[in-house]
Length: 135
Image (tube, rainbow, N blue to C red; front, side, top):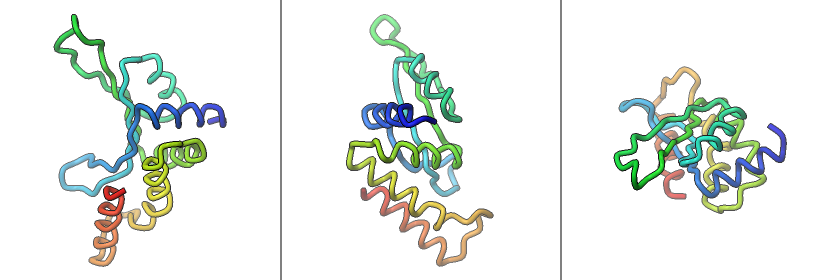
């Protein structure tokens, strides 16, 4: 991803996106996720060509009143961390800057590769999540 693309993506995320922690399954810990909602499928397809992501279509119950809407999500850890590291210098919204830094600086520390947590690690993981949502 070139710098101009990273800056463009940062602007889209600042304006229409979210940087959060989400669960893939009910009983698992939260993981970083980037999502962008839009009615512009061409925009989301362009972003999808830059990063490994998924575009979901939201059913339009009122086609005579509303445009079709789509959500692009980036959930794969390697992709999320790559995108966050690239867009960080270009983000302008303070809350998104803080959340990005928090994930980049702490997520790998509190997340074991094998997914097995000691009581101390579990406490650190839950504190990480709480601190993230307090931002």
